[in-house]
Length: 201
Image: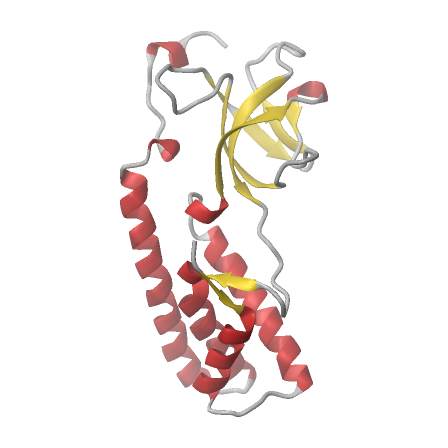
């Protein structure tokens, strides 16, 4: 999947602002704004391809809780679905209901200790962007214009900020539209009622 460097994003923001350079203090603001906008884009959709992990085996801990972290695997940022067996293959599998607490996903309607592992579909934990990192291309223009809008607000240029905010949101809406088209043909986000799913868990 395509990315652009943070340095490239920074240069776009500088170009929009019409300056050759920012002060070191402003550099820090731009990075802070970038992380805020990154989180906003990440939260806008549960099935961004880049962060989606489908049907990964995860250990079930005490009290039927699936922790956010497991050695050797990505940290879970958001639990989406939990299945008894490998999902999205030819055979149906029971899907568990759950609720999320600070310790992880707590499975419902499952006998305590009846399963050592389950299959979790989740979003990876949102990364924190640093000066050395790259930006996902699908977030790039939204973040650039959103950061510039934040910079304008900080400078008291609220009317210009509103225009940039609208432009940023249009870029995000375009990417959400593309992602939704893909999701409409993707079984990962669809719950299908089957005989197996309706059985006692």
